[in-house]
Amino acid sequence: MMTTKKTAIKSILSLSLPAIIDMSFDTLLGIADTLMISWMIGNAALSASGFVNQIIFTLIFVFTAFNTGGTALIARSYGEANYTKLNKTASELVFLNLALGLLVTLLCYVFKDQIFSIFQTSEAVNVYIAKYFKWVGLSILPMFLSFSFAAILRGSGNTSTPMKITLIANLFNIAGNFVLIKGLFFFSPLGIEGAAIATLSARWLSVTLYTIILFDFKKKVHLRLCDMLPTKALFEPLLKISLPSAAEQALIQASFLAVNVIISTLDTTSEAAYRILINLESISYMPAVGISIAAATLTGKALGEKNPDLAYTTGRQSTFLGLAWGVFMGTMFLTFLNFWPRLFTSDPGVIETIIPVLILSALLQPFLNALLVMSGVLRGSGNTRTVMQLSFFRVWLINVPIAFMLVRVLGFDLKGAWYAELISYTLFCAVMYLKIKQKKWTEIKI
Image (cartoon, rainbow, N blue to C red; front, side, top):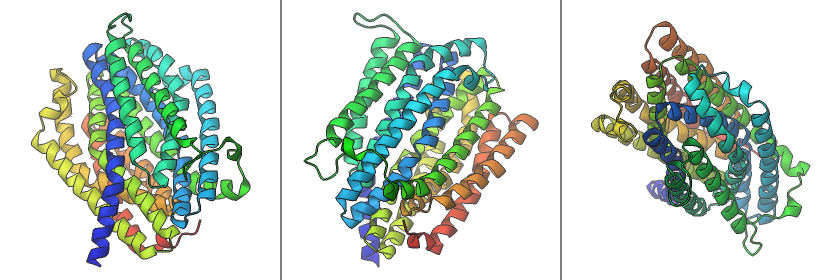
């Protein structure tokens, strides 16, 4: 048994490490924009970019949830060594993302005024929102495609290629920020539009690199244009697994928007502090996302190999690793409490607002990271319905109502949003752990 646990941990770490680095680099792309916009332009621009990215990622996370079903099916096919089915599933997944990406991009531009009117922002912030979205909105399609390409590779056990592509894109994005925001060499200074153009260019670069790799027919895992049209045999199970994930993401992202609307009623200092805290939390849980990706792939592969005991052991050990990382990051937040906000800003008011909330975020870390990993385990098995149901109860019956009560009614300001998170994550981390222990997810047929 001990040997099995050690083998499981070794497999998780070997697969998750590139995914962790990949997720970390991807987060750095957003943080690089945040830092440069904050330092080079100001708090109003920082708030604007945050609101725009919140809308874009809300839509992308909801509609790219189909990649969850794709990853589960690809991992099963990978475990069965059925590469014909794997490649057909992968090709259909890309077609679906292409269609959805085009649709979402079109709708965003047609209804942009109505979308951003949900935020109660100042005129200065609104001006920056218009400039930033004009370019970043065009990056929605390449993000859809990149997410599907990465899901295909990760589901087939290749986490190193997405890591390398993300690294290249991040370096390109950071260089573009330096050149375009202030105007270096023969470029004119473009301000917040320069940051947006750099991000757009980096995301299309990622698509180009993925396309070169995945349309190589000499490799076992590859894409073909002729395989992209949907077939009932593969599309039905894809939708069956993916629709609950799409509903889950819709619920979660809508709750994020609800909290954003609540926070937008506070002052600009609190809005800027909120953006920085979100970035700090994204740094903290990226390794857990990497572990979650590895856990989903390995549990799906084990179930494809008809080995439910290995799938369960992988799920348990993955959860332990996520919890351990959460304890570590919580300790780091508390130990270097004054250091973290100063990475993003020198504004005394913003720093003063961040520090008490960061203490709450530190206490949240073990539960947040463990829950992320356990959700990945269940998704990898194809049990997306349970994750969706628990997410609904967590965000809409607990998190959002408590956040509204604490922030708007009782006057807790920004701290109220994190008290709500701490309560919801603590409770549902325990519920999710009980679901993992019951082992019913190891019996899912897809």
